[in-house]
Image 1: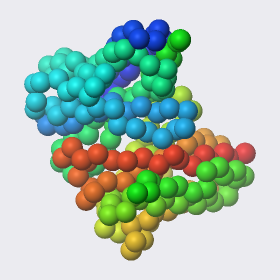
Image 2: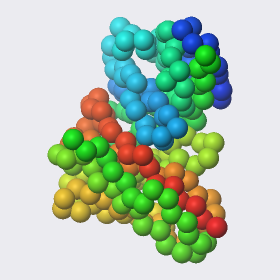
Image 3: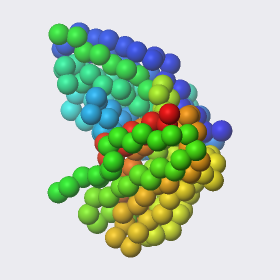
Image 4: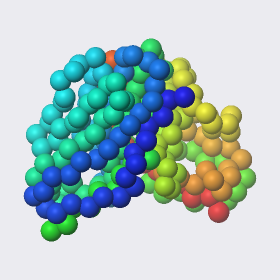
Length: 115
Length: 116
């Protein structure tokens, strides 16, 4: 079965500090893409960052970076210099190559950035 | 450029009724995806349409169905509504259905369905 586990239902961080959100996944496939999505109160899912499983180099997007450990099937998200606008639900997800076009999501982590 | 648009924003139905939700993809996108987000759960894959055809289906009963029109817009139909169908239904679109090749999919803001 393909699953995603986010073990932290809720987290909080002070503005300007750094926070790491955890994600583990399970798939028997070798080629896949991993994603972190942000869902603010507006409910629209926004792509934060994407990682190709065959690339060893960790992806970065401005203040967002990932720690991808393929053997451990771990894909954590680090947010540096947290801002109030980062307050949202964060979902980890993956899709395997092979044509199913099915994103498998975790249950999410609710992140609150405090002033 | 307009993003993915969904209607209605909110819908209240009685158990046993039918609900129809609509989605317009980003201009030029041919693939449409539907996801269900029930309270406290992550997103569950419902359906994928590409070029007017249903390409994949998630683990949902046949009461959940849909279609994609020639202009690539889509509708999701839920028949014989049950209380547990209450959820946010999110539509997303992408170019040529190549999410598995790393293409980005873009989500709408969703339609809230409440079954009473």
